[in-house]
Image 1 (cartoon, protein in one colour):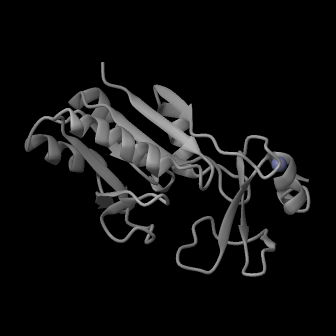
Image 2 (image 1 turned 45 degrees about the vertical axis):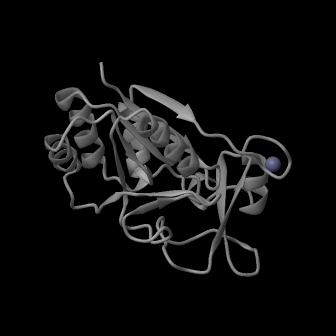
Image 3 (image 1 turned 180 degrees about the horizontal axis):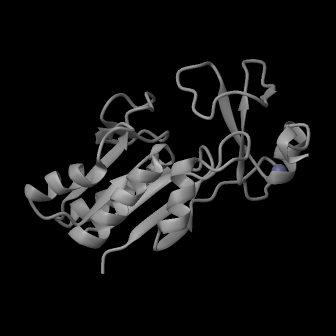
Length: 198
Ligand SMILES: [Zn+2]
């Protein structure tokens, strides 16, 4: 039985590295994998998944208007696939997560999605929320806060290293940096809580 997997993490936990290693393990055994990533993320260049430790692989990109079921079906027409890997899965729309679920159920191909759980304001990305709802199996790719506790949150910092508390969920190409923190230190950096939660 094929399954939909969601491997979630905060920023800089090395999820792309984990994805690339897993794909490599299949390919080393002569099995085909299909790699997809969000076109919205310009970091790695169009059509490439790159990790911060220097490894990378070619990937098809999806935008929010693509039907990812169709993309996977088209790939399957060209031959057997051991599994599909989706990076930056937080950028999938809820509809696209359902398309992945249909690919798993109706095309019989395992799909491993890798993405961020929450944004810099501590809110679930819509794609991640739907994956949390639909995935057959979930696993956390872990990293740690500077204090040594598990980091589950992320702050967006300006060039002076100050935490930014407002802004769009997705911001590409600015000078902001992201730091992963435990919840306690995230609350300190953010001035405790987002206003709507007070
Ligand atoms: Zn901490």
